[in-house]
Amino acid sequence: MVGFILTGHGQFSNGLASAIDMVAGDQPAFKIVPFEGSQAASYGDDLRVAITEMRAECEGVVVFVDLLGGTPFNQAMMIANDVDNVEIVTGTNLPMLIELLLTRSGGSTVSELAEQAVQIGQMGITHQSVAALAGAEDDLSDEDGI
Amino acid sequence: MAEPNILLTRIDNRLIHGQVATQWNSTLGANLILVANDEVSGNTMRQNLMKMAAPAGVATRFFSLQKTIDIIHKASPKQKIFIVAENPHDVLALVKGGVPIKKVNIGNMHMSEGKRQVATSVAVDDADVAAFKELQDRGVELEIRRVPSTPVEDTAKLFS
Image (cartoon, rainbow over all chains, first blue to last red):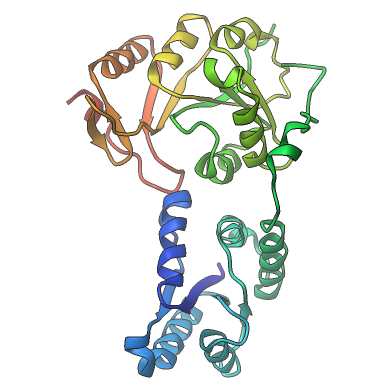
């Protein structure tokens, strides 16, 4: 299985982890590393330990970060430079995590999973309005059956 | 006619939402989510929101309890059905009406006045307990579980 590390500014990772727990329950090989102002000095080391330990247990690690160019991203990239089979996904959102946590045991490589995360994450960003909803038709009616 | 292929029936007072759409349905491998609920069967807004939540390739139906009872035996063998109902009384009505429900997953029954919390996400009153008892007496297997990856909680909690 590929391991997942989730990290971001402030309580970003704690909040997403709590949402994941509500929707999907407890997850194996999934760890958060919050980047909080009070522990800024040790953050890089904490993240390195988390990624290295996860990598020792898993065939690879995807690090989900909140913001391209932010400190969690920068630190993750530097660690990925030293540890093999570590890929980074930025702009992390709930849809991509929920989907990937379900599908990651399917034998995909770390980089395939990271690509899939980007696709699913983008699909989850939509604009909805009630006016458009009213015209929606059920397109899956089956003549055979109910 | 062959018996309808009902994979599971879930009690969830939020009906189709995140847990149901993303976790339960893929674990079960259902291709039809049937919401059996009198209120929703006449509420297109709620139906449209639930259709949006359902995974791609999974059909949704929003039938009243009576329509579910009337039509369920016309299901095609290709239809792998996941029934979602709001409460144990509705499930009991379906069972009494001849819907062949063998197993009920008890998911979310929210706390409200006059109810007592008996499991992590399940609150019941005496009428609920009586309905569960009758379901059991009719041979329906009950299981308390919020999402597939969380442990099953002891059904005895319902009756304590």
